[in-house]
Length: 191
Image (tube, rainbow, N blue to C red; front, side, top):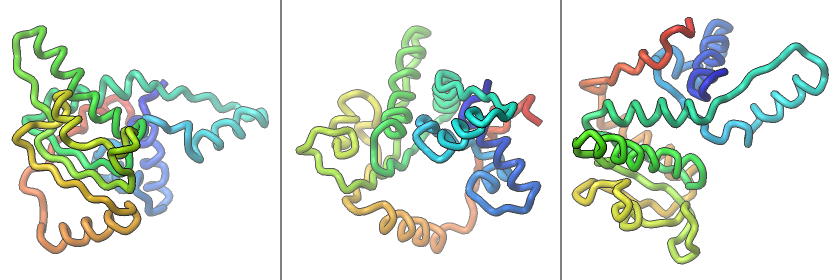
């Protein structure tokens, strides 16, 4: 039984050991968790089904509740947080709800919660349709998911166009992060 981050960490480890370059291999090498709250809605879901159906001794459980606990713990430990929303749906709501969950647990201890301080949203959806993919930062602020005084950028563009441009621009401006969070505690016991 694994969270999606644990599963993808181990998968990245395997790919890295084989010399296969991929996002999850690089994430493994740098101890960066990759969460996939809708992992069954992908090629991984199909691969799982085929392995199970054709009699291979293959059984794995991805625990989505464990995903949520781990991501909420990351948020609770962070002094500040920022998010990049690419589209919407389950992944967007998943990361937004961490702030609500931390707020609820911290308020019970008399502590003050911290909504996301920075946010970038890349979407082709407009707010008038009412879906999560197009909802505005004002809506997120009203729920305490984003900070009122936060720095938010809305980009109405296809992600396959906008994201490479944003990443390239950042790579030109920033040499190296001054402080990288240590998230290796997530993977203790997996090695």
